[in-house]
Amino acid sequence: MSRPPVKNRAAAALAALALAGCGVLAATTATASTPAANDDADSHEFVAVGPQYGKVVTSRSPLDIRQRPDQNSPILGSVPRNKIIRLACWESGTTFTIPNYAGGNQFWYKIAPGQGYKTGYLTAQYVRIDPNDLDNLPNCHH
Image 1: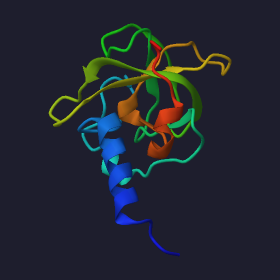
Image 2: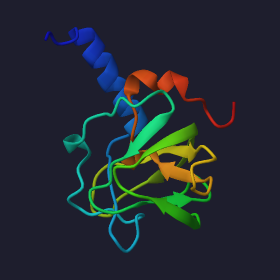
Image 3: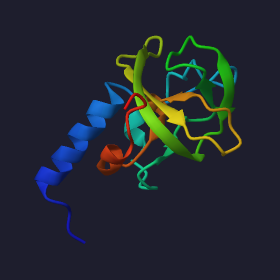
């Protein structure tokens, strides 16, 4: 099987970096808003599950659903790791950061209703979508 042309791989990598910011990944059992230091975005591949779906890629615990796109916003619930979830839209919010870890991510995904979860926001730091499908996920304000 041949590899995609370098141009396509570079475009996908740039799209992933633009969405993911500088870092990526996960949470502790106590609270999904405080990721474990050994979580590493580079160890996870993008998941091609559709244009409006994403996979929670925390290393060992659920990801908190926030009321607003802000890691200090009230927690409404959580989504288990490795769960594939339907997304409604994306939004730029406060930058999600991990203590003692370089990087961060200011993008958040709003959960689409009707999945058994409260409709809130997940940090894009720990949700993988296929970078080729980013254009199919609308901005929450448009």
